[in-house]
Length: 330
Ligand code: LMR
Image (cartoon, rainbow, N blue to C red):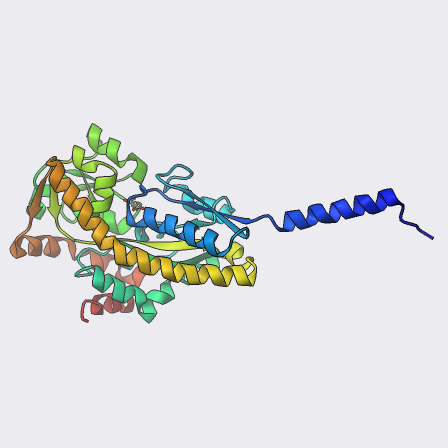
């Protein structure tokens, strides 16, 4: 009969202790993003790390990589699908390869303000979009606000005709390309990490960003004019790899889900204040003239850009556009 020697027993024991130690290793969640820490998304990622590590001590370790330091916006989605990163929060403009429905957020002059965006995101239609990419192994966990976009350039932009012939950096979005073509400007897709240099060297002459992105990337130092146009929104979807998320131990996943609700509420509460503070810092820096549009001037931008909606209606769905538009009514 097989008898365990003292040596074999010791060996078996040490193997099982090693196994236990291995099982006790924390789950590492890499959170990669492209913006600075002093922005709504940068703060959201840090708050997620803090709460996850406080409430799941030893079970979860969160590594946050800001400023495209791990993956730039061209690569982060691919990295998520390959399992090289577990959480990202791309701008809603960056999903068109995975679903056309999210293009609704890029339509110019669709939302009157961020409160309307919020109402739409929290509606049944908005919440449904979080699940619209599960067949591609992408699960949406929450919406995070950044804010409304402002136009910037080295030329004063009062009316659409002022933008004619200028080169504008756009995110990887067909809607945003069409938006600039509608005012006879030239859109150039460019990753976020390259925008400052692109503006500095004149590869592009202008851009569209919320105040927090303009200030934290120092774009105001290379843009003489910023028009407070509020012509569109730049918000995010916090996403994960569906297989990874569903494979988490149930108790860990449910705690992380609670944390996600809290983090989204906090990001969305703070985003406007962060943008207003960034705007004030730009005013104080005196690098750029901030242009306020009259209602008539803003109407001209709207009239010029709104035909873009029609071009994307079939892809997005007329009902979804209607639901988004309805969110302007309280
Ligand atoms: C951009 O590329 O302009 C934005 O998506 C960057 C960001 O994540 O806010």
